[in-house]
Picture 1 (tube, rainbow, N blue to C red):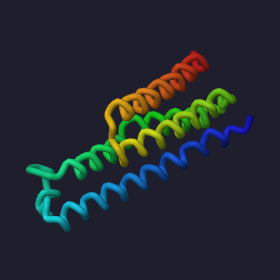
Picture 2 (cartoon, rainbow, N blue to C red):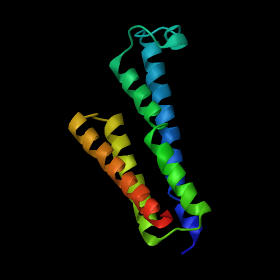
Picture 3 (cartoon, helix red, strand yellow):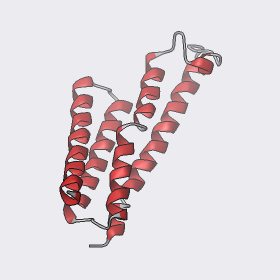
Picture 4 (cartoon, helix red, strand yellow):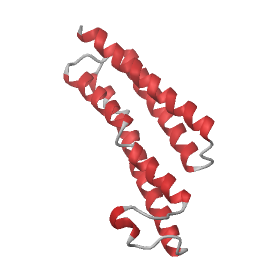
Length: 137
């Protein structure tokens, strides 16, 4: 199997990161335009702010948590030249669930669905790391 195939799933997650950043910016603009928040709020992120803006900000911050472990896993698999079909499936399944999770967060933000999709991402990523550990040890 070509090891480059493990890099391809990283690209949609990076794209999604940019989409979420743009969404966060649009929510901030909406809050500023409606005068629900003042520019000075952004200096230290303290004080009152609309819930929709805080949700968008938290969603964006989340992209610097679990997805970092996904990027690292893919890069390690690439570097050690140990990419199998199961690794590719795990990576693309993570991408799919990350898109589902982000869609839920940017639309209804219904907590039970959001939690389910988050834990699916978490479990899929855990499977990838366990698979890597088995290969290495």
